[in-house]
Image (cartoon, rainbow, N blue to C red; front, side):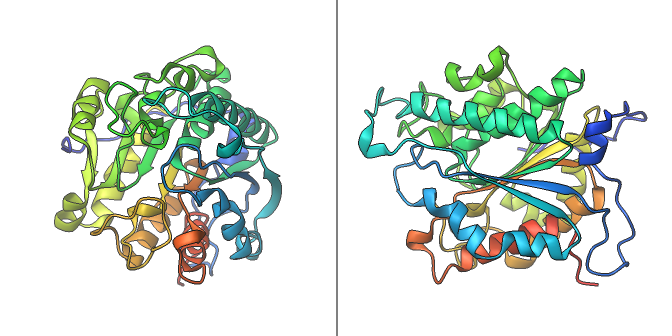
Length: 340
């Protein structure tokens, strides 16, 4: 369900000095392996697995680090600071709570801590790179980015790259797993504790929200997409028929229109399980290895990404850490690595 492409607005407000440090302009695409000005990057691990039924994604941040993320980003000329992991409750030590939103209290506490750390990173002129954990961490990441720019009287766009739309609410979720609810929270649909981090909602506007590569959407989520007012939803069929370049160019225009930039939330289950077997909820028919890299390279070309997160790497079901290694490759492409 994709609305026709719209043209980008003719003017864009200047971002703050700190935001400018976080959003460098795109450089030449033929200047070596790194075509963008160097950034200061803050890595933030959020080893949260309370939002899903399948355990193991809490080890995702470690797997991505072991795969050499910091060294790869530094090789591109970026300055990298690893902020370590945010403390997360262990499922066996906590009560599930309401079955319609399992571990919601603990997930909200974790997301609130992540949001504060993201705000501090942006205040220091750094680009946050958040490593999950399950996708419920996005409620914290995006809240932090939105809060930082709200203080500057600006808003952000959101690029949601995922096999799933994650726009269930406790009332519509068939499982009660909160990793299927973060987009609903960010758009103000609920659950309320996640939606109201920093005591305001919604964190993003539907006209600047774009879903890319979805292929497994609950019937109730289809109604929530309509209710939220999100019109820019690119399914895998759109990518098949129109090509990744066209889809990404349109998506970035939508997310960037009238915003200070956009957050990129990448769930590794967007990629086909043939290339990314170690993910929380694998779904056949995803993006290929090269399609995934092209999407990240186009994001780098535009130069307006203000923050990035990568979620749902599950080493328990991975094959020799190759999903985490692919994750590092894709993050490198998003931060400017070029073939030539």
